[in-house]
Amino acid sequence: MVSFHILTLFPEMVMQGLHTSILGRAADRGDISIEAVNIRDFTTDKHGKVDDYTYGGGAGMLMQAQPVYEACQSVIDRIGQNKARRVIYVTPQGKPFHQEMAKELSGEEELIFLCGHYEGIDERVLEEIVTDEISLGDYVLTGGELAAMVMVDAIARLVPGVLHNGQSAETESFGDGLLEYPQYSRPEIWHGKRVPEILLSGDHAKVDAWRLAQALARTKERRPDLYEKYMEAHPPVEKKRRK
Image (cartoon, rainbow, N blue to C red; front, side, top):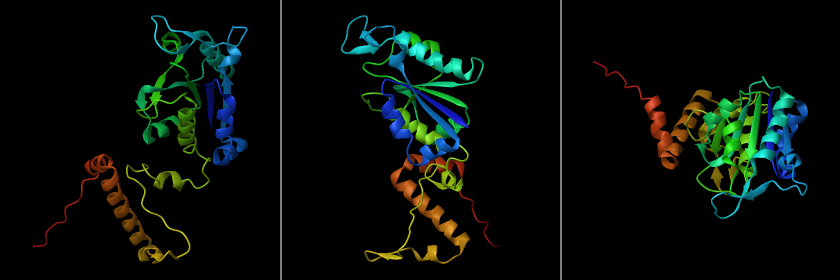
């Protein structure tokens, strides 16, 4: 089981988003656990203030070190000081998030996500508590909650038991380095478009070959970078010429 702890100023936003559908049911079964920790609960300011002006000037406010540190320590104290954990700061300055990273993190027991706001968080507390800085992409959001929720979703669905059909996580896009092949369901004809005949043949070997060919073609067209990487790892086997 993986336990997700999200340090945030907006716990309701996080819990409403993550305690629904597949993840909500997985949490109810005990396959994962999700909690939101309100950073504001740990401020010493009587008005609940967690931010202040930046030294050196500049636009915007900065989240202070003390409430962030205390919020993180409250989680660490509960899970145990000696227990392995990753503290992930969600920031555009971090390493780009990808499927292999999600797979790696799904093997951890305790994941703490730190969601910044305003102009970010005092650098001193980041140096003190953060083990990983991860970015969802080359753009800026108003806060880290949405990015953290996306990462939690991507990681959680790889935890055993979360998806009842374990094969789903293996065959979807990026599972083998390729985009997923096109898929079809009933009816057999819709708006004059037929399901490819090969999928109705019952020949699993031919279906698998068709799906691989489609995945290769789609990846080559839409993500040539992934296609080149896949082809380097899977060079075509040359057929021996007959004498």
